[in-house]
Length: 296
Image (cartoon, rainbow, N blue to C red; front, side):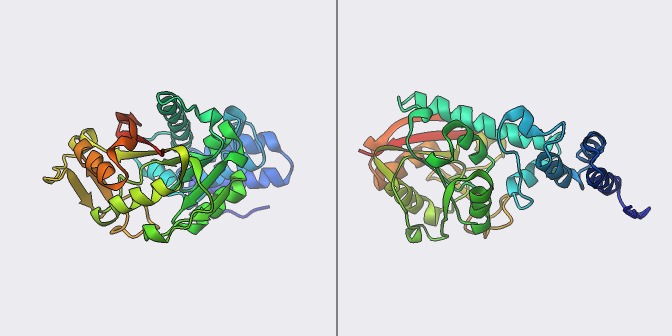
């Protein structure tokens, strides 16, 4: 029998009780107790992991039909868990990835390149799989490759979702592409880049696209700047050395806002204005602008 101190939090007591019930083979009782533990912030992720691992009643994988494992090092989940507006961080986090999938599909339909018919997709700056799990359900792991500057994030997605993956680099020119991809999807990277690497990343990522393929990326545009009361400079750019990431230097990965004119000028001078085939203001999360480039 597990000994529980009176000073232990409610969440930890429920977690210990749930584990004890699992060891006794009482899955029904464990599911009920762990569901309560999942409502306590200090036990939330551990309770979720047990529910998912043992396929108990209340698991998100039973509802969504995909792997709902979440890494304890996932900064994006940490953002949801710590945000005052999130009453159910697990649901909000997993639903957010599903929403991203639908928004990407809408964007690709507009340029007649349906996601489901895309042979290979590189998800760049993929993190710990917030979106990857949904992409894998849509395409299968064989068509998805991930890359991130945090090696443990890449390894998590490889071992959890079965995708191929490789580490990125802090210096854009040091990234080595193992292949070229029909779609390179870069969600919310350019919304974090300092001016010194913004255009360089655009150039390098465009090089990863196969002939005829697409580069899709997002930015914090005017709506986002106005929402956060940010004033852009004369070039249409603003950078603050602060972000939700705890794993990347804030000078390399902060928070960036750019005007459409800034983005269009960088596209023109870097890869050519004619490569832009579609743009959609305030597309992802009703917050970030989207740009689609096609490689000729």
